[in-house]
Image 1 (spheres, helix red, strand yellow):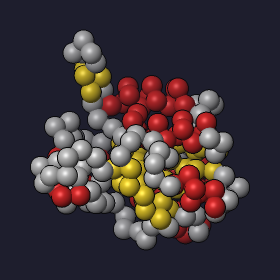
Image 2: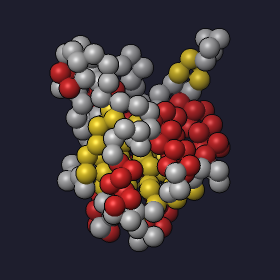
Image 3: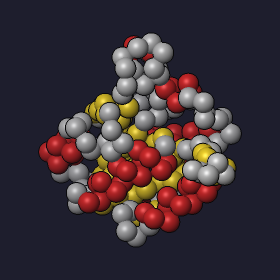
Image 4: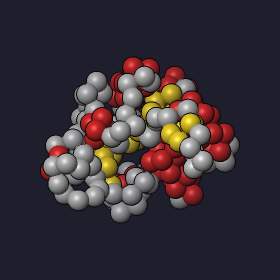
Length: 185
């Protein structure tokens, strides 16, 4: 089954958000970079997706004017098979990514990137609903602690646990980096 890796929103913009934390970054980058490197070695196309939205102003880290809509420092440099810019949570809304994948006969997507429960999960669900087989590599996704509506803290690890629970066997196959690479071979 022809496969592509999606590297979603792995961009400097996030460093400029109040919730940014370096705590989980080293482990995430090890996994993300291993996934990218492994896909390149196997000839699996690696697709870069960047998020750009809000006012086009230098103080908005998600605008082109900020200079932050670019690869996150520490990400393995790679020549993307294609680059798409999105303004919604799903990488498949309004970007042309769906057309690009279909034209190339890609049937399986490996989902990775930033944030686990937002753009990565949303893209995985959307891709599944559109008929793609989805491999979700939680170790190659990154998220941050949040606050629940009542103000109670919600740890990033709990957000990841919730995300994989709702995706498993419904929208995606949960994979480690090695499992995703083996399935892509």
